[in-house]
Length: 132
Image 1 (tube, rainbow, N blue to C red):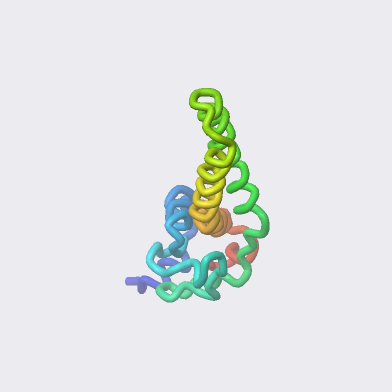
Image 2 (cartoon, helix red, strand yellow):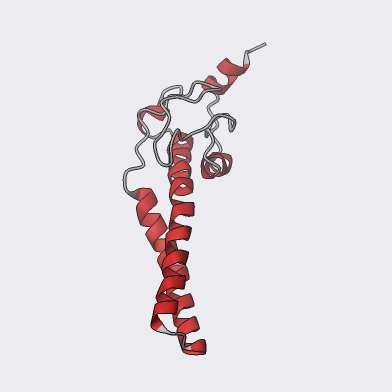
């Protein structure tokens, strides 16, 4: 019978959905238990549980682009609706939406980074292709 470590390493089937969901939770895309990030956006070197090497994962600007895309598409129509419906004072409107945009961006950014690393692992991109 294969050990857990060998089974995880030799698995040819890397399902996309579980890898993305584990990455979204900022967990290892392979085992789902170890932490993917060691800081707010800094990737750990390896998974503390299954020892998957993260050093070759490259999310680059992808998480930032996705965050801007989502926050912009959510907040712009909401801003228009609030302005047209209630006509709040400009400073009140700015304050509410600035806090909302910053808060939503800070929430989404590490989650998108984890999901992108999970995508890379599931597709075998970069150094994840050979036994990772």
